[in-house]
Every structure is written in C-alpha cells, then in structure tokens.
Image (cartoon, rainbow over all chains, first blue to last red; front, side, top):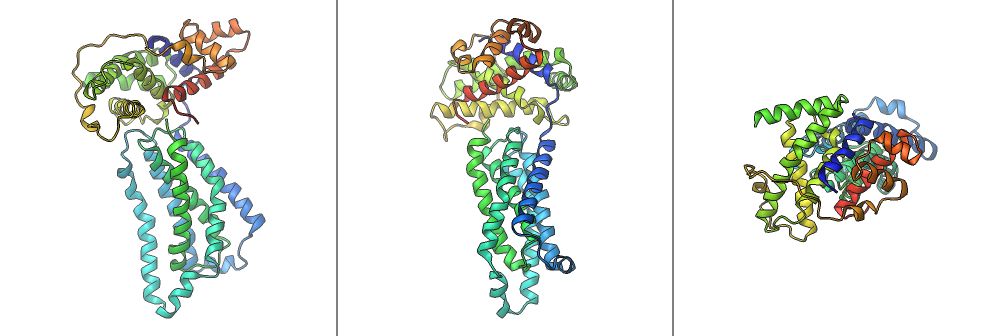
Length: 214
Length: 183
C-alpha cells in the first residue's frame, strides 16, 4: 500500500467523524456508569449502614468518604494527563499526593488522639477481609468501564495508565463501600482501603499492559 | 521550524472543525517528517532502511486514530514526535532489540536529506486480507483503488454510513495488525 493511499482512507474516515469524543468525556461517562452500577449492586447486596445520617456528622466518616472522592478526582486527573502521548508517566503523579497526604494527616491525628491500647482494634475494625473483598468486587465494573474509556488514549506507558485506571476504579469501589462500612477510623482506612485500592491498581496494571497498548 | 508548527497547528484546528482539505494537507506534510524520524532512528540502531515505510504508515494511522488526544494548546510537532517515538520504539522492540537503545537522543536530530516515498515493503494485499469481508472490501477500495466513500457505497450496494463504519473498523483492525499484537 502506498502511503498516499493510506492517507486517502484516513481523510475519508476523518470526514465521517471529524471530532471524536474527547477522552475526558469518555472517562466521565465511564465513572458515572461504573459508579451507578456499583452503587446499585451495593444497595441490593449490602445496603447502607443504618446510622448513615449520624455518621455523616462525624469527621472520621466524612474523611473516609471525602478522601475516597478526592482520590477519584486525583486519579481521573492523572489518567487524563497520561492519555496524551507527550506526558511522561512520573510528571503526572504529584496530584496523587493530595489524597495521600490527607490520609497521612488523618492517621497521625488519630494516633495522637486515641490511646495506644485502642490502636489495634481500630486498625483491624469489625471485618477487614470483608472490606477488602467488597471493595475489589465493587470496583470490578468501574475497572472495565475505565479501561474501555482509556483505550481511546495514547499513553506513553500502557502499564502505568492501567495502574492509574485500577486506582480510579478502586477509589470508586471504596466510595461506594464507605456507605456500608462501619469502620471509620483512619487507621482502618489506611490498611484495608489502601490494600484494596492497591490490589485494583495491580490488576489495572496487568490488564493495561495489554489492553491499553496502541 | 516555527512556520511549520504554525501551519500544522492551523491545519489541525481546521481539521477538527471538519475541514477535510486541511486534514489531507496535514497528513501529507507529516508523512515526509515521519519518514525522516523513522529513517534516522533506524539508522542509529543499525536497522537500515528496511520497513521504514511500514512504520511511517503505522504512525500515520496512530496519529489519525488518536487525534483526539491532541490538545489545542499543545505544539503539534511535539505531539506528533511523541507518537512517532512510541511507534519507533515499538517496532524496534518487535525486532527484539530493547533496553540498550539511546532512545532519548534518538529522535533529536532532524536535519536530514529529503526522503522519497517508497512503497510499503509489507505486502499490502496480505495485510488487508486479515480483515473480514466487508471491511476488507471497503478498505481495499478506498486505499488501493482510491475510491471515495460514495463510490464504494455504490459499488457494494450499501449506504455511505455503512461504508464509513466498515472503513473505521477496518482501520482500527489494521492498526492492531501492524503492531503484530492481539487483543
């Protein structure tokens, strides 16, 4: 095939769709769709914790929910930056410091205000393994949606892009699960939520290496 | 250099607004630029000129399929160069030479002798033949035979919309086939 022949085809294809949807639009749709399905699953299977209104008035719960949402926003922002081929993977990462520092500050505050004898029970909570399993399960559909949206990008490193997509999905799962989970201590969040989100990041990395190649 | 960026960015913006002529000008201007990048990278890594045109075409296809990742505040030249770099590295990796490439300085030097277009060395008919029936017919008609979508629609007795869908899917499948990886 001559290069000019190929150009004919590309121009014809462009004429059919001059302005493909921006990645930001696709990612927002993926987040909205993934979140809606996860939230529905969550309501059917787990349900909202009975004391949700009272919990909303406590800083620990608000921080758990708000922190998850901050991570959703930060990971989305990083994913969008990474979707253009000129962005070096590391240069987009500092945005993730915002949720990280937020959680660290909460952990330090918790350690300073709660007696050392209560640290372990707070960190282990009622059911850490249940938390881990629920967040990963609730993140599965958001992960598929995120990978689908990110396939339209052109990342320098498909693996890193996949990991960030996994982190985004994990954060969405965590946001939904936070409504059910009664363990609000930052110590619990720093262990179990972070573990679940890390698992999703690794899953995203493994999937992204292949699925996000271009 | 600045003139080049100025025209490319202008064509890119016009193309995004639906101007086909500007899009063709852009791609036609990009082809020799890419050829130069690919030739130099191949020369530096000892690959000579074999399959240069394949990588040029693969890069043009990627630029086309990923055109929505260009941000209008960004230099077109650096965006194009980033895509070319990705494709060159990919093609070198496929040949089993990776890890030791001076990739960062590979693409810096760009003052080269004008390159002439050559045919892609890969058998185009064979590459297109990996496509399924309708996609193969449409891609063949529009690339090798140079038909318009209207003409292709008349020939195959389908709507122009169906031609466009087949063309788009065919091109996406070709991008995958060029890379020699499966999905």
